[in-house]
Length: 345
Image (spheres, one colour):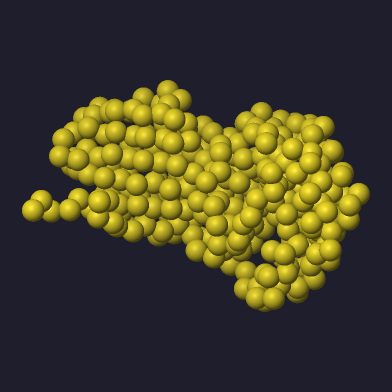
């Protein structure tokens, strides 16, 4: 009988960003330092790699409904089609003599969702090809490489929190300066975790967005020294520290109120962070008793996160559904990126 083919797989968790998003984006990060507070959830980016006996590389993306074939002998051209996969393969296969392979990619959240799906996919790809090409990378090096590929090699605008969150997993307070990120895992009381989860509503607005324009405006404000945007970004950083402290102390009422204050500050750093639909959904949630909330990611669409008292959750969820939103179930995920092997059936 033929020997079973071993398939290498990897997955990395998507994240909820509670506070600090925007302070991890240059030039603010390099000039003033930043911090973010986030947690990974049980939604993932998945990649699978099956070796071939020829020199063909076939890449399938379920999210974009694309199938493309390449040769191991060619130099990839970054032309907007499957660039994340091509950039990771190019970086990690240097000097390797491996045959071709089939690569399959998919994510539990659509691009533009605000859950960090693109960066999480890069982390999953780096984790997979680290094993495939036998590269000795630490967790910090995986996150740093994922950031460099996405932000520098491909020129995709954004910050650093998604790559580090997806790599390390769990609840993290991450600090940034001009040269590095430091991941501080939070050891939260189990009852605090249960109550926080019970207080949160994650609702898909059914609008995706392109974050690049929002981030371009944010960058321009900092480069030009826009006082209002700068003050708002400083406030985001300060509120992030306060939210971390409230979480560690189990003060969830304070956490919810600070989330609202953070959202009010976030809206001041770029004009397209919110829109009429987001404002309407958030305002309706507040009228029904929500203490705080925010749009996830850079803004403009994606997922709305709402912090609500336990006796208001069902009313708010029903209203958001009536408005065309889609509340989704989720749990916190403590583990970061992982790889494993399986035999093809």
